[in-house]
Length: 376
Image (tube, rainbow, N blue to C red; front, side, top):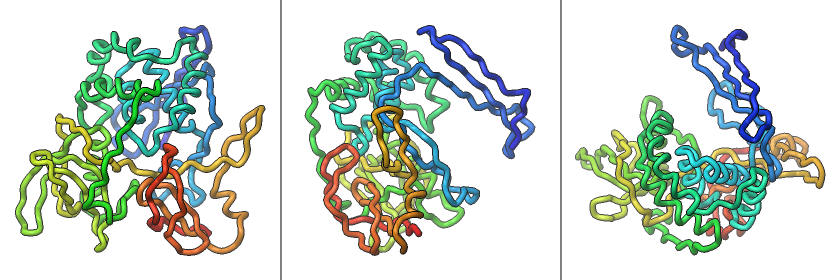
């Protein structure tokens, strides 16, 4: 890869608050389409922001053969901080991307922060920008502007165009939650899926040359955005047909097959589909209201627990990988809860899990985990 020095631009300017910010544009030449105009990376840099929580050291997801053995780690926002920053942006500028991000962060129920802590972080961020805690009535007048910019801002960034109504109509519930006026109902577990372990891994092993992983990405996108999916499917008798479904989770059968747990949109009946029998996946422009928990969000790499905090300069959270080398000898086995996706380390190859809470702070009903890897 080449990064030409003469095609690097940095513009330092004063933002509307009168403070310095910077926008950078870096062009690069890579192995793909080297004769076309160089693609650019855009950087927005600012010191005009109040970071409330300690940053987290997280591992970059890089599932390729050139990944360094020690991994790639960066300092990043705590999830609560990122959610609060997006919510503040929604209240202050109300752009289509802000609406999309806030609704998706809220819908990820397993990672949804504890409300009181979230409100405290959001309140501090709003105070720094000189605005009040957001109210739905303040955002409602901007609907026309958001609708006008919805296609232009999001269509090129997403696998399929999303109906704006399904996002705007989610705001009353989100604001009720923000202000402590919403009591969430607990959706029932799909009975036919209860005995099969949940798949949280980002990358699922499929034979070379198949489309399984790309189908999974499309299904996850549709599920997160509450879109129906049309699948082209060949059943065990060899009959091929298409059907519209509500996608809920990916599970592993006792035989080791990947199963898509879903509900048929035409009759509301739960079904399971073998991923290797799916021939095509297409998101539809029809939305659905979940009957069961949507458990399609991949867990990916976990943030690395904090080891030090102070009342002055906040120490960033340090790497679990580096600490593991100084720990006691012998291998450490890592298991992932099949329900909430939390990782557990064991000195013995025992998948039984202790009582624990999910990332939203609620009690998780998972009692066993799936093996992930061994650390030495």
